[in-house]
Length: 205
Image (cartoon, rainbow, N blue to C red; front, side):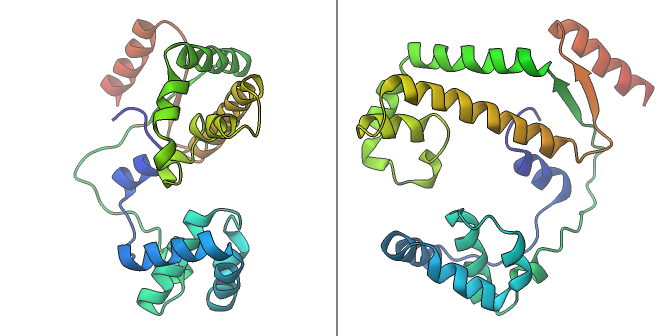
């Protein structure tokens, strides 16, 4: 398995907690946030699950909605449901993380954003304006260009924000992966050399 969100990788490797869900309730809560903001959900969460309230990102509607959804469906706290117990998998797990020099990584991110713009990212975002409120489009690259199309910022600022937010995302990814003490970090080099390092490690172990 290569790439993807760190949370998705952990879900495959460690399993997921059995937390109830309801599309109808989630949609209802989403509408509440759209109409009234996050205050009501924050108040409810603080009252029903003060432990999770202290650690949750209080500006993240997705996390808040998910917590309230689970609490209402189960009559338990979200903290109680988040057991984080690893499941036993019928396969061995080896983690390999390619580690770029920070300066080189940021250069590559900036170059990638420029290439995406040259290859039509703005046209893609423009075609998605009718769907801009979908949570899947509130991500780096889309959010900044929606702001440009709505005349909040100019195109130069939008592109610079995409680069800046992409660099921040990369930094968060590295922080996430560092919690895996068993991971093997491989310094970036020609692909064949990195493949050989991984192959040798698998052979030895």
